[in-house]
Amino acid sequence: MGGGFAGVECTQKLESYFKNNSDVAIDLVSEDNFLLFTPMLPQVASAMIETRHIVIPIRTIIKKATFHEGKVKNIDPYGKRVTLYGTNEKRGTSLNYDFLVVALGSQTNFFGNQTVENHAYTMKTLNDAVVVRNRIIDMLEQADNEKDPILKKSLLTFVVVGGGFAGIETAGEIHDFLHDAKKFYPHITQDDINVIVIESLPIVLPGFSEKLATFTKEKLIQKGIDIRLNTQVVTFDGSEVITKDAVDPTKNPVKEPSMDAIETKTLIWTAGVTPVDTIKNSMFKTERGKVIVNENLEVPSFPGVFVIGDCSLAIDPSTNKPYLPTAQNAEGQAKTTAYNIFAEFYGKPKKKIDFVSKGQMAIIGKRTAIASIYGVNIHGFLAWCIWRTVYVRKIPKLNKRLRILLDWTADLLFDRDISRLKIIRKDQPIDYKELDEVDDVW
Image (tube, rainbow, N blue to C red; front, top):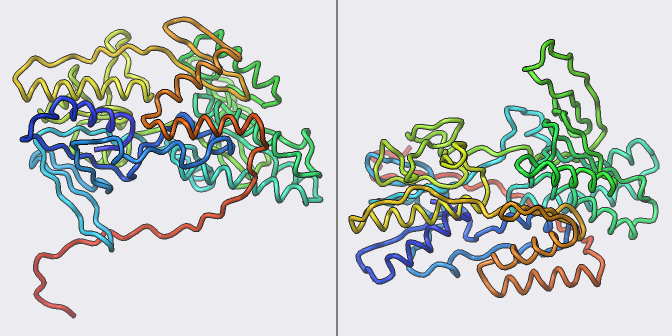
């Protein structure tokens, strides 16, 4: 279950293990019929890469498996059955299993802040990136003809909450897009544009070395991005962000937090993720929303059920801490799980999770990035070249790689497209229950 990095990688590994075994059937369930290459989402939002170029149809990268497009409604680990939602166009489906791999990923975590959830934009899905791109262009269009300087400033102020990978990369791409696009808006100057990053921790990019995190902060400030650390969002009503100082409860006495307000029409929330509700409502034992698994990534209470990726509380044996919710870790867990299913099928000993990260990379703006590869820290133009080389090679299909390379080449030669694509939202299909027997119709 799950069509992200973990689910697709596990499916492909299972296909390779059982390719000659006709008695084995593999089913892959996903809400979307494509694998989304999430590291490049900010570049879709900044109009550098075309939307379809970072999605790979799942049916083109699987061979033996049967694909089911649908949303998981219920997991019954006792009856070994998974139920998918039906709609007004198709019936609900039940799938029986002998082995189950749960890789349903995560959703945006607003930490209970309902005002932010109601008004903020997110950067988690392909739709999010397109909506953010449209929002940026819409704000430029409105601001160019706005005579009220206070309102104009709020239209051109973009707040990104979260100083992790998603937040820093989103802020850098938005800043570059705004400054590239302003040439088409004669009444907008460089001083009118304001991009703000809010982070509750005292550093950006936690998990990177202090040297690279400091370089990132200084580079973003040099570009003109306002970095506000030790700051938390209190409320956002669609026009004003109220913030306060992040209080360290270990300090004595605790300092009374000061409040501040930012006039903005656009807040992009990238401050955290949480496992999907399907996991939280399941029968599996969870901690902080994640399913507790053993060293083989198997649920202790339900043999044959494996949980991997963002929804798994897998412990890194080298640090005794949970694995970070990254694509690299998800793929490593997927490979271990596929082997363990193969091993159990043929009566072989299972493997313990032993994945070691190769490093981390983040792009922080035009021709600038940071990278930590096998303990070696790199920043600047070289890291930017490495980032592009590594990630374009990770794209599963050659035609998509070529399209992305063409997008990057076009960005060097031409201006970015500022066409605003209107999206008409439709109501979600209703889940219809199929009736086996009807006695009376009134």
